[in-house]
Amino acid sequence: MSLTLFFQLIVNGLMSGGMYALVASGLTLTLGVIKIFNFAQGQFYMLGAFITFAAVEAMGMPYPVAILASLFCMGLLGVLFFFGIIQKTMSQGFFATMLVSVLFANIINQVSIFTFASKDQVLAPIFSGKLVVGEVTISTGKMVVIGCAIIIMVLLHFFMKTKIGTAMLASAENMEVAKLQGINTRKIFWVTMAVGCGLSGIAGSIILPVTGAYLMMGPNVFLRALLVLMLGGMGSMSGALIAGFLIGIVESVAFQFVGYFNILAILVFVGILIYFRPGGLLGKPMPIPGE
Image 1 (cartoon, helix red, strand yellow):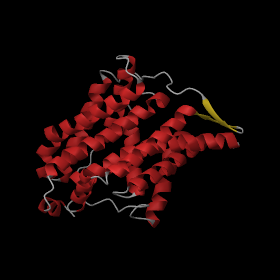
Image 2 (image 1 turned 90 degrees about the horizontal axis):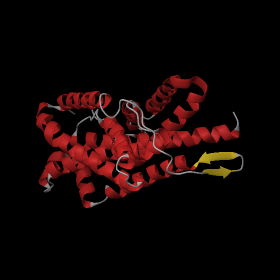
Image 3 (image 1 turned 90 degrees about the vertical axis):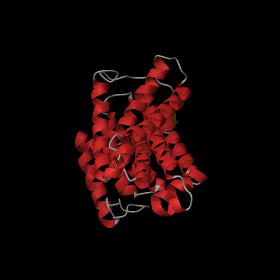
Image 4 (image 1 turned 120 degrees about the vertical axis):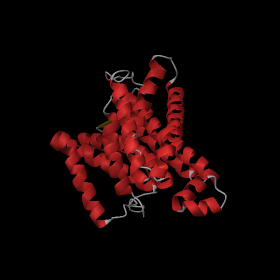
């Protein structure tokens, strides 16, 4: 393997891993705070990409504005999903809400197939040019994606230190104690849903210029986000970022040798690390419903 190819694989892995980390962060927020396993998290990622494409191509919005529009739409859809469906099934227990989210994800997929996602959409390159370091050539667009993922994760870290972020963490730790401290858990729930779904939406927007928008991008990223959640550990944003990058790099390098069987390499890699670190790299083990 040449040095140029090696660095190309690393950059591709970091780019994909950054997206996995963003989706996994949204997933761990909703799971930790609201105690729901949102199987539609990947669909919000897919919708974010298509909304950004429509905003740029059909409405003529500048790309940064289209990203904000996607973030707003996915956050709003997350709130509607919470009040319209999740809130009404929470009293039925963890598995009821999980199954409802599976149903919601399938509805989005089926509607998408017959409407806007019937064919793949490709956005014209937003960031042209290449970064040349010696014999290594790296796409500027991919570097921007990696940088944006890191910046968003840093912003999320500081958001969790604000008053509302602290209330979210307190609710995740102990809901009853949080209520006794005067925290409005109903407000925290819908804010958490908005942030969690918004993270997936903005991830889809960021990756759009590089990979385009297509139907199966949601399920593909969701599977990898689950592995990131397991490897990074519950409740750790830095753990999610590190785990996302590691899984992205393993996936990219393995694809060079075994093609689409690279998912097996990812599973073996995660399995080995989980064996030695059951709680993940920097967090806690995933909670068992009812405990």
